[in-house]
Length: 551
Image (cartoon, rainbow, N blue to C red; front, side, top):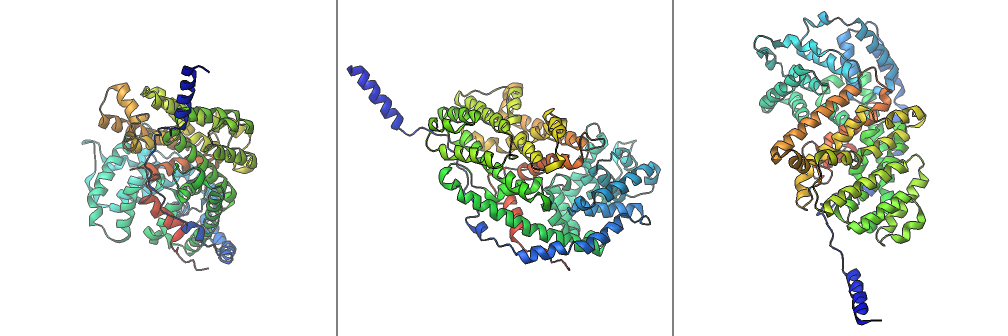
């Protein structure tokens, strides 16, 4: 061998022995340690709660269909049923009642009604898909001045309900756009002067409006913040509290199963570079499906979320570009025989990915994972070449890397017999509500994480690509992206109004995904940095005591 050839070979060997420079992120450590493994499930209590449903459920059903109940009282009752997470038990009864009330509705009926009543009625109809006109609020506006009438500011309860109503607006409803700004400003001004339940209601609504909140969390807080509404009917309080306690035991059991799977798969050992967020991941599964009959579905979704998290972190914060190209090729082949081409530290992860796919046929489409890997690689290539793409080019890829396509497809595929080929074809046609939820996820994530990403010299996100494409400063870019987020919410709301292309039960996972996004990313990245809100919600749903039902 010639001397120069020998030297070249030696250099190559030395080069391969040098640890590669990795874009390691300083993710905060987990905050739960092994406490989750010590969670206990009382199976006798679980069984007792399940048996205690029957009597109050039948009593509440009779109330809902009671023909002698005043229409406003009935709508308030349906509102509480919805906010307490009981709607699925009375879907047909509620639909029948709302159909009747909506057909009989006369706009003149609202001439003498107060702000609270009109706002509550508006919320109930809109939440269940009925497009009650926003014109019902015209009476509260002085059209000569263009301002809302001064007297309504004294009605804090009504203003709060009006504020919650604005969260259900769609494009073109200018009065609700104005009302959102008006009511929010008024509530911020008075919140520190309030006391008791009303203070708690306003404070929480300003932090997280009900329509955009995670449903299980909102249900739990409704017990304490809306005691009067909960206790109006004994059967409502008894069923709701028993139901919540039942779900808490069931969700604890599922979290234990998921936590044990994380430990058995040795994720801490094989993926030390990834965020360790076990209970936080499980919150996403509960957010999408909270009902008892989706127990197995939640476990599948949580496992899928863990795999997506690890893929996200290896592409975004650990793998070299050469390793990521190999990993993307392997995922696209989806064959065990390509494993030998992968770096040693990636092999265990790839093996889990293939095994989970085989064990859970309805787990997530192989194509969705492959598409996600290609999207992740595109972002990695942009970073590697220090290229800031155009905003339009970034968003096209960003709809993929938001991960919501994988989440939504997986959610539909674990819903059982109600999802047929026609439903999957509907989703594959890229309906507006699905595209808006993907875009919402991408923009929310970017707006709250771009500064942390910037610390690693990564400018592959919405803010910097918008700044480059449109030549605007950072504050303008963030403002415009937040306006886009509000418009996507309007489109999601419209996608839930009748006539819908598929049933509301099938739209619910998509809407719930958007809600969880709002909860996690509204102000900052509460998933990566879970010390505050996410930690509070994990405690609220799994750790703390719950209201004791009188069963």
